[in-house]
Each structure stands twice: as C-alpha cells, then as structure tokens.
Length: 249
Figure (cartoon, rainbow, N blue to C red):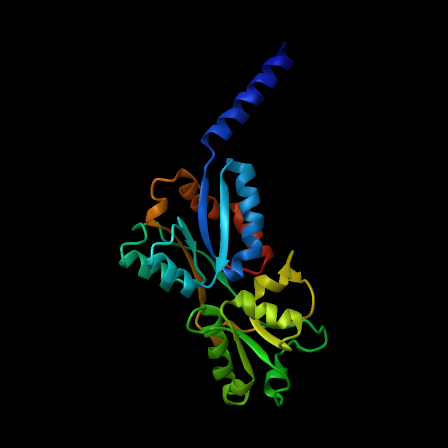
C-alpha cells in the first residue's frame, strides 16, 4: 500500500509539473551559447519549463527587439544594451542584473600557435585574425581595445576579419579561415580547462569589463517560465556551470 501511495504521489507531482510547464523565448549572446544549452537542460529538469535559445550578436538583438521580435528574455554580452532596452520601455524595469562577467581570449585551433603571454601578437602578422564586429558585439569591441592597448592595432588592422558575432569569429578560427581569433573564453573552455588548441587569456586591464546583463523583456512579463529562468540564473547550480566555462561573478 505504501508503495502504491508513493507511485500515486510521484505521478501527481509529475502531472503538476507538466501542467505548469511553459516555454520562454531567449535571445542569447553568442558567447553564452554552449553554457546556456547545459543550463537550459538543467532548468528544464528542475522546473519543467523549456528555454528556447536563439544565439546571436547583442547589437543585432537590440535592433530585432526594437522591431518587435517576440523574445521574452535577453542574455546580453554587455550591460549597456539591457539598460538601453529598459530606458526604451522594452525591458521590464527592475529585472536587469549582471549574471556573469566574461573573459576575452586569443585562441588558435593550432595547439602550438598561441603562447601563454600573447607574444604572437607582437610578432609580424602572419595570416588572418578573426574578431567579432565591434559595432555589434562587445567581445569585438574588447578585442580592438586589447590590440590598441598592446600598441599593435595598426600592424594587425589589415589582417582583421570580422564576424557578425563572437560565434562567427570563433568559426573563422576553428575552421582555419583565420589562424587566430579573439573569442570568448567560454567558447574554448570546458570543465575549467582549454578544450583544444592554444590560448592566451587577455588580461582584464586591457579592455573594459565584459559585464553581461540579463533582462526580462515586455513580451515575457506575464510568463512564469521567463521569471523562473532569471531566478535560475542566480542559482548555485547555474553559476557552477558558468564557472566551468570561465565566467566570473
């Protein structure tokens, strides 16, 4: 009898979870694509809600949201875009917060190409250097800042190839279209280590902090799944995942 009651209780709990489950449409900065896939899976197991992820560049998301795109949550690659959306009346006031601080990394698919001090940038340029479009992607703007701070921007400028997002910049470097790429540490790190290739983590002093903010957008104001996802991003479980990809808090 006790076993039967336990089965009934489990079925009722599962039914209740399914009945209250909902979807949330999430615009995700490209640097967050991999960790958010893991977080979304954990979020679904914990809450029953489904986070539908659309990765892309923060600047492009801003234009799409202003044009009426039905995103309910924005996970940006900066803190300025969510603040602008809040001022524009397109984000829900009081919901904006910094969910992580990213790190910029110089990376190559060649395990011998990038040294631990980034001295490869001070040698005469050989091949292409991929960056995200600095007008659309904060990681691209940070890459230009770093090159300028090192005094090598003029030398590398003719060798730059721009991707729309840091995701595309990574693709250029990963496929060999560019020998080097300034990408997000999260794109090349897993479980606390560089997964493949060679990398130099750019000192934070060489660029403005890559504070990444989240905000609830007006289309998600009445969606319980949207509010639940923002709460989950503050959880120890979500932060542990993000730390494994090199994010800081």
